[in-house]
Image (spheres, rainbow, N blue to C red):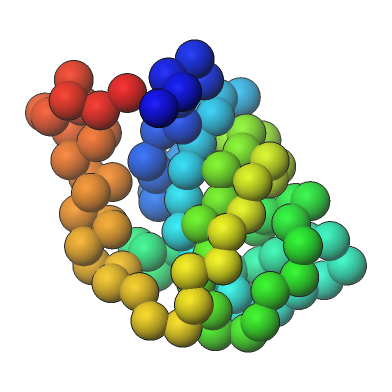
Length: 106
């Protein structure tokens, strides 16, 4: 596993803590607007992903990239996770990775 450039697990609420840093988030696609994906984060808030390829509506997408605003990520890697994804579990992971157990995560 490459640990030279770790990506912090975030939801839309946590993203603002990591502007300028590499992050990892999961969004459900709401719409694609010419290279910009607008989606719903696992915490229910909206996120914008710049530089992402188009994905099918309602699909979940994992995005790794640079947080470039309070609600925006500049994508480096985007992976389609399909239509079924446990957003509650992922959001819990985001909370653990940014809470008292953050030392267990890269």
